[in-house]
Image (cartoon, rainbow, N blue to C red):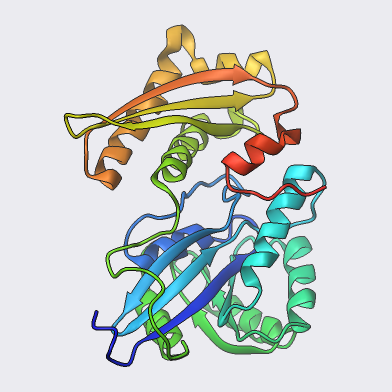
Length: 301
């Protein structure tokens, strides 16, 4: 991109209740995977940025954790990260799942947004599985509660409506130089991205067997002379029985998690990956400042 030409660049915060499809939407706007996706609520923990291009426009997409009523320190850190992601944004996308809705989390979010001055855009996601008439009624109801500049009906999963929304977003971005190179799609380090992909496989393969309070810590990330990369990670759980679940019979489960994560990492990094995982029991890991910093969250008291 010739930066002497008239370019535009802006920040778009993507917020909403847990499991509304925010990460899937960010990936769709960027055009490739930059955020992990899981059916497990509250999967996104830190503010991960995706970088989307539309002509001469660069949009920095802040994929925030789902906003919910925080109970533990980890919860408070995640909600703090979400609201920080919305500050000073040129546009705030409020993503809503019209099927589940999660009213107990959506209503307080709308009340808080009504007091904010950022350009707010309502995105009703998952239209591929929602019925049309209730969808229109919901859009009308929600727009009465906060001043949304626009409303979009999309399916982040199928891509329906995403291109139109992306073009509209791009037209609202302010003039200015791009903040990132043309070929960069995320600000997440390769170390952090690698841990996120492993964590996604944990959720995908263990479903409800593994509680939400598990973490993947980066230990080392080494480029080998042969052009491959060697990655060592630690899966942290809170109890011995959780460790047994992650390991599986004769180590079968952790082997499957490692193989799936290694395959995806090889595709994302475009190089051969040697991935080594081990599981550690740390009962109070959610009170560890060091682990918070490693997974990209601020320490919140």
